[in-house]
Image (cartoon, rainbow, N blue to C red; front, side, top):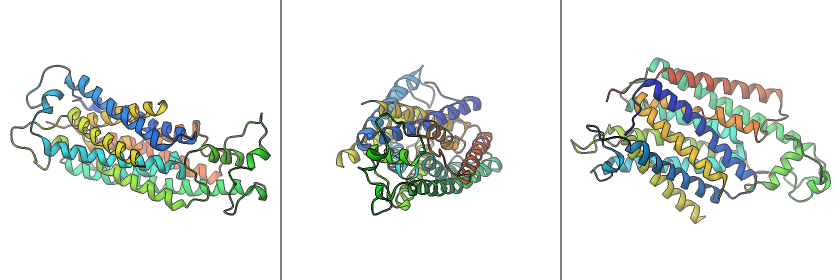
Length: 374
C-alpha cells in the first residue's frame, strides 16, 4: 500500500483536504437554497462519501505488497482487530451527526458562520485531545497559539452572524408594511408578485433577494429564533471535535485494546469502517424522517481521507488545520450565494478579521507538524 511518510507529503495532503472540506458544505447549501429537501441531498452525499472510501481502500490501500506490521486493506479485513474497528465506527457516527447538523444549521446562520463556529470548536477540543493521544509529537509552543487563533475566530464568527442578522433585519424593515406578516417579516405569497416584474432581476443582498430566497429554499428561516441555529451549530462543532480523536485511537491503539502481535488498523481500513457507520447513520436518520449532492460526498470523502493520511504521518493535531475550511466555504458563500452583500462596514470588519485569524491559524498548525516514527 502507499503510505504518506514525509512531512512535506503530509502537509500537501492537509492543504488539499482543506480545499475539499471547505467546498462540500457550499454544494449542500446551494441545493437547499434551490428547494431540495435536505433528507434527499444527504442520502446522495453520504452514499458517494462511502463509495469514495471504498475506492481509496481498494486502490491506494492495495498498491504493492504487505509490509511488516502493515498489511494491505483486504488482508486486514479478516484480522482480529474489532475493538479498534468499533472505535473507528464511533468516529463515523460523530461525523455523520455533525454533518447532518451542519446541513440544518446553514440556513439559519449562513454557510460562512456555520463553518467558522463548527470548525473552531472542533479544533479547540479535538486538537487538544489529539495532541495528548499522539504522545505530543507536535510542537506545543506553536500548536496551541494556533488553537487560540481558532478560539478567537469563534468569537469573531458569532459577531459576524449577529451583525449580519441586524443588517438583514434592517433591510427587511424597508419593505412596505402591507408586505409583512405579524412577525415583522415578509409573507410568502404577495411580495414578489407586487414588486418583481417578470423580466426584472433581483440584486443579490437586497431585501427583495432575501424574500425570494426564503420562498425558494427548503428550510424556512424567517421569524425563527437565532438560538435554534446557533444551538444546532454548537452541537455540530462538538460532534466534529470527537471524530478525529476517535480515528486517531482506532489507527494507533493508544488504549491497547487489541492483542499483541495483531497489526494496528492502517488508515485505509479504519477509514472504510469509519464511513460504514457514517453511511449507516445517515441512512437510518433520513429514512425515518441524483446530482450535485454526489459531488459533495466525493469531495468530503477525499478531504477526510487526505486529512487522515496527513495526520498519520505528521500528527493528527497538526492535521486539524483542515478545520480552517471556513476559508474555502466563505469564499463560496460570498462568490456564489452573495452572503454579506450590501452589509454594514462593521460586518465587513468582523468578516475580514475572522478570515485573517484563520489564515494565521492554518500556518501555525502546519508549522507545528511533527513526524511519527512508527
